[in-house]
Length: 464
Image 1 (cartoon, rainbow, N blue to C red):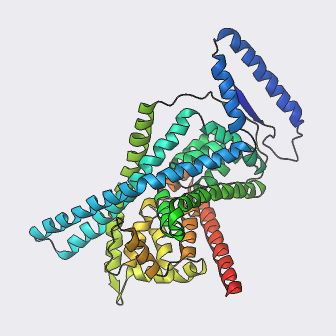
Image 2 (cartoon, rainbow, N blue to C red):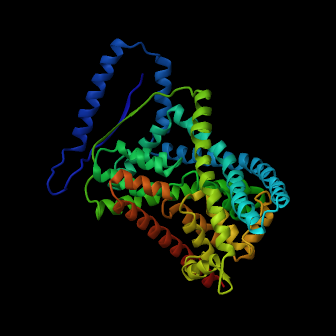
Image 3 (cartoon, rainbow, N blue to C red):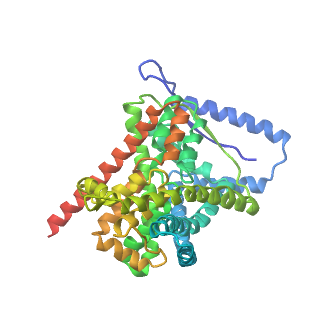
């Protein structure tokens, strides 16, 4: 058994009240403690010397200041590449099956004499939204979650925390925030709950407020689809590579925003210094395939998909109603989009995109279906089994590469979903910090999109 550790040598408190010991002295004390513990353990436990030496050699590569970060980024890119490649065809096949059922549902409603609005509300609104969410979400999650669980089972995730601890310490946050951030990739609500492992209330609050800057499973389908359509389409022969690099780059950008906002909070609203952090790296373990399948498919993929389905169906019906209830010869949906359009254009988006994100507050999974329903005059959706027609629809409504990039950025950074906001309220004991989290993330999303759009327009003005 090989015990590794990382020690963050700064302590929580007011910088004016606490005098700090030398970093070298602290590290030396901790190192001696662990050496003594390891010496005692060796006398009582039988060791596999080959495996211990192998773990050390692997960690020299995976926890190095240089190669550790590079390997982490490479691994991230490979995971998204596999997800993009593997999810494309199953998603299209699933879409054909689910959207093919629509005709049978419409025929059944007609046979029992159901009014046209019932057919529209139940089939066009609820069922088509449901079919879209399932066909677009299920294949990527069924690939991404097992890969993520494999790394978790292998013992790699603590190495990620080890590599990122230095950056979080420099940002005035706690090293364990790297672990809570990793939980956010599955679900931001789960990431918020996992912040309980941070003992310092100040640092725990920083982790809670910034957890939303890493994309959860509900936002990955949108990021993957838009990256495939617009970024991958720039170079057909290298499409999947460009798309996977784009999604990986967005994740890294989200981590950078997490660090920047953590630094801002630790310097203003939540002043203080990071607390001491000792991280024990467990030995590498051979993954258990059965455990990976159960945890990734049953406990994560199907659980998250079930939650999305429960939200998507009623949301689709409501959006269909808003698209068909008219006031002064204009639908309520169109009026809401028109009201938001000036702000959207300023950020390189449009009113329908902002309206879709607001209406998608219950769950991030339904943002793209709502957007497509808003674009189509009759409040219906096209099938996602035809990527060409989907891209044409977006382009016909004024989408450019800038629109796609800013939509992905806004999806990455915008306010948490309703479940996450409720979790923040529960974890912090009041609505004040939940409102703060929503306001903070939305302000960051608006600012980043505005800067991106302004730079793009400036470059276009200089060139042309």
